[in-house]
Every structure is written in structure tokens, then in C-alpha cells.
Length: 373
Image (cartoon, rainbow, N blue to C red):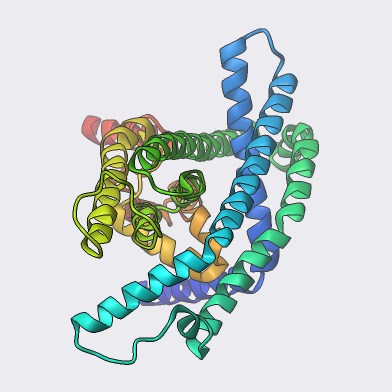
């Protein structure tokens, strides 16, 4: 088969797969979230089992499930309390925002500045918030379905080994499939666990910083930052901008802020931006790469492209899952000679599975064989 024909087949197959993923997103996106939640719980259970030594893995799983559910319920409570607190001061926030809009119009010597209500309830504003509400509502409605999927994944876990033996009766093929599966699972679990630790560290430091700076509703903003940090690259940028924006419209400034109104508002927001960005930048660029290791061996450009593609295909769930899904694709593509070039393009260092991975061992063996020849 010619190279042009092969390329055409790849293009058609890619289009068909993307279309399939898009049209079945209502089914596959919740299931994918359930799988990664299952892997997160398994990672917690393994960590607890390694730390305690005296607990059985079944007991460790129960503790991990309770921890994850407790964290999820606590997060929902924080978000509800934060929204209620903002609602109580809605009038003051609205006045402050209207004042900032008027100042912006005065700077450019324009008249007829709109109010916040006029901006929110015009055609563009209604369409924007309707889109956000629909996406959030769909994700909230899938929570019960995701939890059901997770429960059935735990129930079906015990039979996976027997099914694998029946599907691949040959020992060599079965061993290879098991190694590939274990490698993909380790990479995804390591990524999810590391991302959780990093997000928690940034959240705690940001929370105490916001308290020290006098930002209102600091706990709500910190919880929002924890979630946003799961979105690669773009999430950390948005997480650094959210607290300063809320500080900018905060009705009252702390006593320590220098300057006089309205200059003190911008000085205060600048302080908040500097502190929050410091934690995001320092931890994201120095601590996270050391902890992440080779579990996210993806090119930075690939991370951004994957975020855009999965966001279009699966919406908000796709944005959260873009990095681990792309890692999974890279691991699977690396196992076949026909698709290994795709895995190499996706990887950061040209070695899809790292030096210690299954593919790394194959490349090392091939290089040794070539050298001996």
C-alpha cells in the first residue's frame, strides 16, 4: 500500500473516531470520569496499604472510598457556602462592579457606561450563562451515574484476570497485554495522585495567603483553585486570575492597603495576583516536575492541543481528562510498530514510555542488537 493511501486511511479513521467520541459523549464521558475516579481511589488504597502494612487491601479500599466521598461532599458544601456568602453581599459587589465599569469608560472618554445587570441580561450575556449553566447541569446530573459506574468497576475487578486469560490463551500474548495494561494504569494513577497532591499543596498555601491578605470568601476561592488545577496549563492560568478578579470587586479594602480610592483597588488586586501567581509558578515549575517524573511525558504543545480537542469533543469532562487520556493514547500507540511514530510525536523526549518503561526496554534492546550487528 502506498504512503498516500496509508495517510488517507489514517485521516479517515481519525475523523470517524472523533465523530464517534463526540456523538457518544453523553455515555462515554461519564464512564471515563468513573474509570479515572476508580483509578484515583485505587491509588489512595495502594498508598494506604503501603503505609499501614497491617491493613488488608480490601480495608484500604474502603478507607480510600470514604476519603474520596468525604472530600467530594466537603467540596460541594464549600461551594454552596461560598455562593451563599457572595449572594448575601450581592448588592455591594454590584455597586463596586458598576463603579469599575464607569471608571473604564471614563478612561477612554466614553459615555453611556452599562450596568452589570444590563451586561448580564442582554442577548450575549444570556447566551453565555445559558451555555455555562447547561454544561454544569449536565455534569452535575451525571454524578449519580458516575458513582454507579465506579461501584460496578469495583465489583467487576475480581474477574478481570480470568477474562484476560480467556481472551489471550497464549502465555506470551497474555503477558504482553498485562504488562501494557499495568504500565498504562501505573502512569495514569501516578499522574492523578501527583496532580491531587500538587493541587492540594497550592490550595492550602493560597488559602492562608488569601486570609493574610484579607480577601473575602478565601475558602471558596481556594476550593475553586483546587479544581481548576486539574485542567492542564490553562487551568493554572485561570486559577491565578480568579482571586485577583474577586479582590478587584471586593466592596471594602483591608486597612493595610496603601493608596486612596480608586487606586487602592488596583493595588490590592495586584498584590493578590502576585502572591497567587507566585505559588502557581513556583510549585508548578519546580516541585511538580520532580514529583511527576515520567508519568506525564507529553510535549507542552501536545498538552495544549489535547486540551482543546478533548474540550471540544467532551466539554468540561474532556478538559479535566485531556492529559491522562492523552497519556493512555501514547502508551497504547507505542506498542505497535505501525503507530509508534504517533507516540513519539506525542512524547516530550521522543521516548514514549521513558527509560524504565516497556517500550524503553524494547528500544534499548533494539539499539543493542543493532550495535552488535
